Amino acid sequence: MEDLYKTLGVSRGASDDDIRRAFKKKARQYHPDLNPGDNEAESRFKAINEAYGVLSDADSRKKYDKYGENWKHADQFEAQQQAHRWTARGGRPGPEFEFDLFGGLGDLLGGHRGRSRGGAATMTRAQTEVQITLQEAFSGTKRMVTLTTGDKDRRIEAAIPPGVDTGSVVRLSLGADQEVLLRVVVASNGRFQRKGNDLFTDVEVPMADAILGGEIEVRTLKGKVQLKVPAESQNGQRIRLGKQGMPKLGTPDVRGDLYVAIRPVMPKSLSDEQRELIRRFNELGSDQR
Image (cartoon, rainbow, N blue to C red; front, side, top):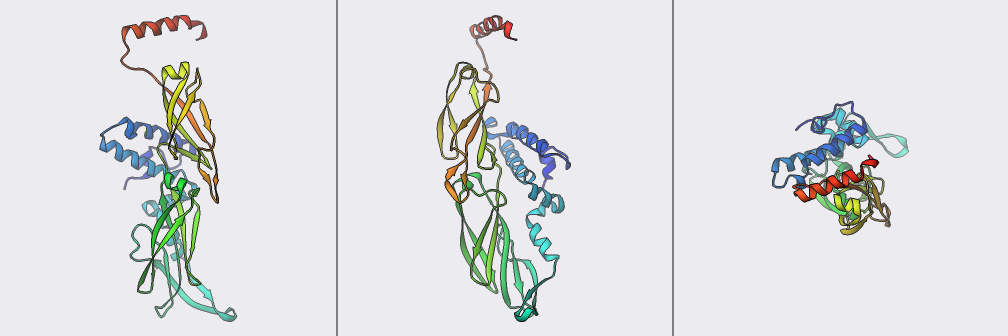
């Protein structure tokens, strides 16, 4: 597995801004829309998104710096390094437990199984990370989790509500002696950047529409909408689309906004007549340069 810092082309001491700039640059370079049919570019684009998803989050970056490619199991590793004792009646020490990784949970659940010295399962607590897409965080989703107790496997369905973000925890109570904590990681999205409940995106606009004004189609997580582009829009100018952002966790009817940055696209393959018109435009506007 390639080092995530190398994937983004930054040093381990890179600042958050350095990482963000490197991601945007490489995401544009390898975006599938700009490299149609290029499988290698698509693979690089996915790797870049994965790297940014880890390094842009302070907690996951800290774990990656310490554990490398095994960072997803950081909580398990740290739990194994500690002695755990449960208190029995009257405050006396209860059975001592050894915590190890659950077996047979695939990529989804890597939790801990508590066993007494005699080998019988007494208390089961699992803690793991679940990665979902930004679209799933927008609409809510479900994950199947396999919980192993003794020699039995129990499959449960976990409902992940709309509005979760990286670091959100979904707690599943399965009874007095069983509990599962699902720590959510929302994968980075090549089209949208998220800040709280607001979303940010770049949209390419024909140069003529940026100058004269026009209407373009913009993708949101809910669907496509029409956006009016004001005349004389500048590169990077943002237009706010109200209530087109992420739903608020716990109050899904309340949503953030979507901010669209205008990116004028220079025309290609100009005819002689078009070039002449641009020359005339340049001469007429020379006093504004």
